[in-house]
Amino acid sequence: MPSLSIVVPCFNEEACLAVLHERLTNAAREAVGEDYELVLVNDGSRDGSWAIMQGLAADDPHLLAVNLSRNHGHQLALTAGLDLCAGDTILIIDADLQDPPELLTPMLETMRETGADVVYGVRKSRRGETAFKRATAHGFYRLLSRATEVDIPLDAGDFRLMSRRALDVLLAMPEQARFIRGMVAWIGFRQVPFAYDRAERLAGETKYPLRKMVRFAFDALTGFSSAPLKLASQVGIGLSIGSMLLILYLVYAWLSGFSIQGWTSLMLVVVVIGAAQMFVLGLMGEYIGRLYNESKRRPLYVVQEVAGSRTGEGRLGYVAEATANSDKPGGKGTRPIK
Image (tube, rainbow, N blue to C red):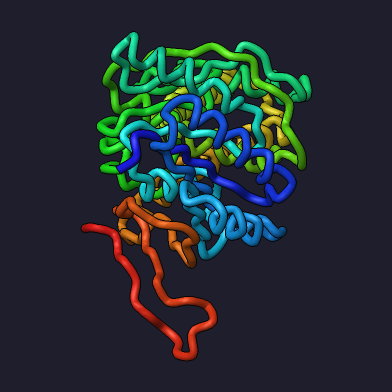
């Protein structure tokens, strides 16, 4: 069992992989010598990422390359890497090298000095990002902090160092819609911040466009807070009070002999109430959809192929052992532990 695992989810990162491998290897050797493993997870890339990973794994015995059966999304790809790694200490980092691997050694020192189970990166600056991205990220973290029952650190992404016991607790949480930085915060233990300056992306384009960011933010809110449901209740109460006041006004106007004009105002009220009802139903649907997905108990990820020596045992996914070039269809695999 290695003392250190570095887990990296990758999607269409062929331009970064060679430099990523070199910098991760140098950082790991500086920190722990040869007692480490690199776990690269190919999340259904459409470019040449998997072929490059296979080549790197053939030349580097420290590298485990995992090819998922399709694009599962960043959080599930990260979950797959964490589930299959075997190190006593685990570093989570993205493939774009915005989070410098060279910070591994000082993060390990911080972990030893403080006795922490988690050392999480806090971004002091975010170079190479638009003003819109910085503003929305700033607002998202503060909204999440106010809305959730869990104290999720501000301006902290998935870049972090974790102990094995913290990771074991994380892997005991089998929910489908995963917001890993929030789940790690929920675990507890001693968690300390590590401030750093985030660099520009090495190459390629961001894999989180606005649509995915909105979905990610909504998953975070609904996964760690009942505030949206409480908001729906408050909207319903407000509309009920408004309706009662409107009824009282209508009765007063009728008793006073006023001629009540108002097709436009009536339609406005109907539209507002209808929109509020659809909003509330939509929020309820999000939570019910989560319950539906959880009830199916499907594996969180499916591994199609592995390059390199796998030492970790997956608990949350399915690892297929049959190869794509097999003469006979089917084959066996490793199912998640129930």
